[in-house]
Image 1: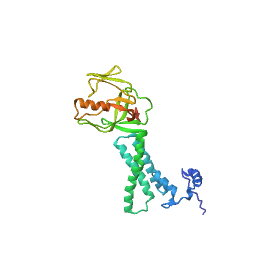
Image 2: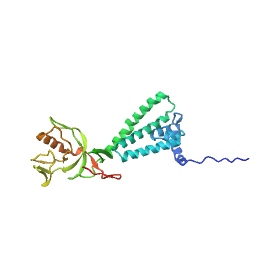
Image 3: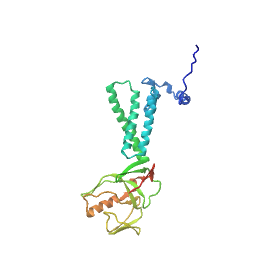
Image 4: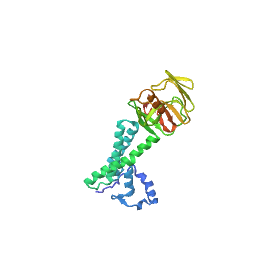
Length: 279
């Protein structure tokens, strides 16, 4: 009886090695030492790509599932940013990534593995994911909770000049006197007046360059100010507890003069399918 041998069918990713092996030789990666019995470059990919360590150690299905779960968690983290499910997704991303690193070190003992698991999780959280989240909040998006609702802010440099009526997110500075206290925070506010505008206060209304607007709580009932260059006049959305009369008005007036350097961003009109409405 004659037996016919059929070689195993090539995997879908086999063609990628045609580009990898010449690059590996050119960069002298084939001369690198091995780590945990495997080529060092594979181990490095296992550190960077969640799930890859399972792929190159023979558990391909598990590696693909974990990699897909990590990508899905990243989508959930972005889409529902600011909600508890987003924090859960971030924890899942860190756990999957840390688990992939532990797969590389599977030869270590039980108790060392427990300690290494905790150190790896905390290390990934503190040195990779938390700095990455901070970068996203500074340069792309930041969730802001207002009146129980999450509003996603487009952070970074303003794309144009702010005008009266624009709603912006800005850093509210810390203020404290004998009766009024405001902690430093990020809040939303509507620009009432810009540099060069004249704001006049009356018992029932305020006037900006002669145009009347409704008076807000704790606004002065008389007097006039002119907004200086590089400042905005934004009445703060804060609750005054314990402050009454003139001291509350003085505190609110000082908080209402907002420097342009306090700018954080503007709300996105829509965040995926959710239309964002600001107070």
